Length: 622
Ligand SMILES: Nc1ncnc2c1ncn2[C@@H]1O[C@H](COP(=O)(O)OP(=O)(O)OP(=O)(O)O)[C@@H](O)[C@H]1O
Picture 1 (cartoon, rainbow, N blue to C red):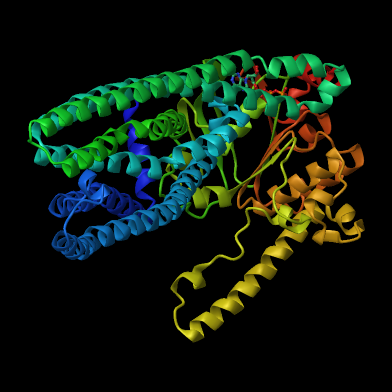
Picture 2: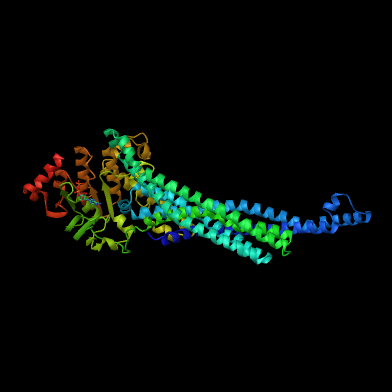
C-alpha cells in the first residue's frame, strides 16, 4: 500500500493538536534559540575573563606574587572592571538557562495534550467509520484485528505531533549552528555541514527500514488479537472439546514473526544509534581540530573556539532525532493500517424519503455475491404490503441472504430491491432504518436495561419540535413534547414486548424492565424474545425475521405467530421459517433452492410437491 494516504492521515492527526501544537512548536523553537544563544553568551564571558587577565598580567606572573604596588592598584581596578564586564554575559546565560528549562516543561505538557487530541480524533474516526461500514468491515478483517487497530495503532499514530514538531525543530539548532560557525569561521561551518549530511543519510535509511519492520510487527500483533477474539467467541466449544492447548498454539502461531520483527527493530535502533554515536564525536574532533589550527594561526579567539565547540555539539544534536524518527516510522506503519480500514467504504445511502405506502417489498432479478460465491441468483418476488411471506428452503439455500438483501443489510450485485416502489439504495438511512425492523437468530442486546434493549433504535420522539425551538416558550413546549414522545416510545416498547412474549418473563424479574442487561439471567429463547420485541417496536412497515424464533418453545412460538398474524398484521412480514406451522400461517411461501426461487405459492398448494415436503423433513432431521 502507498504510504501517501498514511502520511496525509498523520498530517491531519497532527493538525488536531490545535493551539497546543503552536505551544509545542513555540517552546521547541524558543528552547532551541536559547540553546543557540547560550554558547555565544558563555564564549563572551570567557573572552572577558581572558581580556582582563591579559590586562592585569594575571596568570603565571601573578601567581608568583611579582608586581609593584602600582601594578597591584591597576590589578584591583581591573578586577572590579572584570566583575562588571562579566555581569552582562553571565546574567544573559542564567536567563537563557531558565528559558530552556521553562520551554522544556511547557513542551512536555503541550506534547502530551496535542498527542491526546490527535489520538482522540483518530479513534473517533476509526470507530465511527467501522460502525458505519457495519458487517461489511468484519468481512474484510477479524474483529480482534479491528479492535487492535482502533486501540494500539491509533495510540501509535496519535503520538506523532510531538515527534513531528520536535524533529522539525531540531533542524533549527542544526541550521543555526551552521550559520553561527560560518560567522566564526567558514571552514568550521563546512566541516559541520559534511557531518550533518552523513547524519541525515543515517536517519533516512533508519526511517525506511523501521517503517517496514514495525509494519510487520503490528501485523503479527493484529493477527494474534484477531485469532484470540475468534477463539473467545468459541470458548465453550474449545472447553467442551478440551482443545485449549491446541487453540493457544494456533492463536500464538504468529509469535515467531512478532519476535523476528521486534528484534529487527531493536537491531535497527542499535545500529543507527552506534552510527550516530560515532559520527557525532568524530565531527566534534574534526571541528575542534580545524578550530585549533585557526586559533594557533591567530584567526580565532579562545572564546570563539569554545563557542564553536558548543555549536558543533548543538548542530550534531540532529543525531538525537533518532528516537523521534523511530516514533514517526511506527506511526506511519500504524497509519497505513488505519488507512486500510478507511479504504472499506460504508454503504452509500440516498436522500429520498419514503412516500406513504403499505410496505410492498419487491425484488427484481436480484443476484447477491460474497467473496466470489453467489448466494442468490436472479431472485424476483413481490411481497404485497401488509402480508406475511415465509421463506423456506434447505440449509444453505440462501434464506438469510434473501433476508439480508430485503432490508439492505447487503446490496445486490445485480438487480434491485424496492420498498413501496422506491429502490432501497435511494432511500435515506434514517427513513430506511425506521421503516424496516430486523430480528435475528442470535440477537445482540444493546442498552443498559431491558427496557432500553427493547427500545434500542427507537427515536425518543419524532423530534420535529426540537430542531426549531429557540425561545423559552418553545423550549417548554419542546420539553413537554419530549416527555410525551418518551412515554410513547416506552408504550410502544412494552406493547412490542407483550407481542413477542417477552413481557411475561421481564416482569417476573425483581427489577422488571429496569433490570440491567448484563445481570438479566436469560435463556437463548428469552434473548430471542427480546430481539423480536425490539424488531416489532422498530419496524415501521417491513418486519424481517431471520430464523428469529428457532429457540422458542412450541407454545411461545405459536403465541408469537398469533401476534404476527394479529396485532402485527398491519406490516409487511418476511419470515425465514424452518417450521411447517410458520409456513402454514403465512399468506405466501417462497421456496428457495441453491440461491434461486424454486416455487412461490401458498403452503397448501406447495405441500402437494414431495420436494417441498422434504424441505421440512430435512429440517426436522437436522
Ligand atoms: N459471506 C459469505 N461468503 C461466502 N459464502 C457465504 C457467505 N455467507 C453465506 N455464504 C454461503 O451462502 C450460502 C447461503 O447462505 P445462507 O446463510 O443465506 O443460507 P440459509 O438458507 O440461511 O442457511 P441456514 O438455513 O443454514 O441458515 C451458504 O452456502 C453459505 O455457506
